[in-house]
Structure formats: structure tokens, C-alpha cells
Length: 78
Image (cartoon, rainbow, N blue to C red; front, side, top):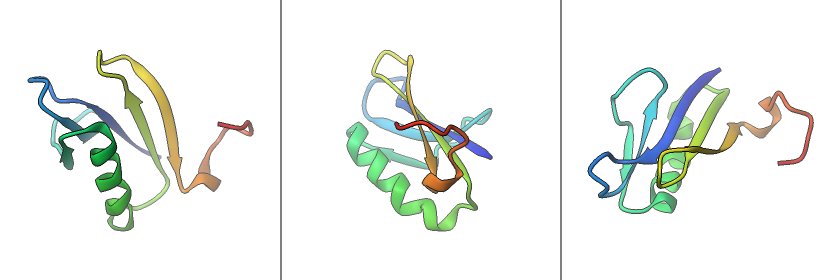
């Protein structure tokens, strides 16, 4: 499963999605929500399954989402 990270840009001006173990930005947004919407739009161009690890503004891991949802390895809600 390919893993991506949604996190605040180091200069603090916006949010970005980058592949795990790479620094190449694949999308950017002024807000976390904008960046997430852009990433979801790009999902058609990325081979599933995909794991998106979402970080908070301080850089700590907050949430993980799997696309498509049916590929989620956990059998629990959320």
C-alpha cells in the first residue's frame, strides 16, 4: 500500500501532501481542508490502495485514512 503524508509546510504557510520517504510535494493548499480536497481529486491518477497519514499543525500524527475505504486493514469504525 502506498503511503502519503498530509502535513503543514515547514515555513508554516500552507499544507502539503508528500509520498512517504520522499520530499516531493504532490499537492499544496493554503489550508488543510483545501489540500485534502486536492488530494482526493488526484486519487483517480494514483494506483490504489492508498494510505493517507494526516498530521496536526504541530506535526504529530493525528489520523489515517485508506482509499478506497474497502482496503482498510482494520475492521473497526473510524
